[in-house]
Length: 174
Image (cartoon, rainbow, N blue to C red; front, side):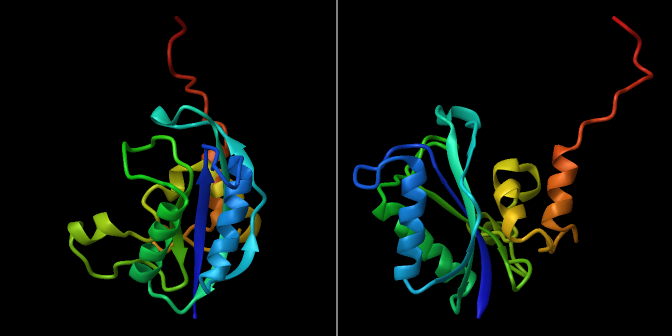
């Protein structure tokens, strides 16, 4: 059985489910009905949009268990996004539902791959260490899970991101 950390996000109303928060909750139900065991769910947080997305996002994270290998899980997640009305478009644009594989109990994926293979699916998610909207919810359900590339825990990655930057005392006053 594989365990995955999945990030969930939404910043547009869904015609049937309503608010982004309700859309995330509906997506969790669809994951379970698709045969995935949802073993933990982080509280939904509100975060500011990055780039051209416009409105802020509702974000969460979930731990799921499934026998699916990463490429098969990615296909399932993309199909669920499509069922919720997600259309491929501009990067960082508004979206009804975003489901990303962040971590996998098998470590890094692909283990041995070309750059083209990594462009299709890379685990850990390439933006993991730089995305507070992923680290904050994930920290509540998997604080000790280690990033297989850096060796740091989710708690450590979040602390590194959220600590204040040191003041440069050598710079001359303006």
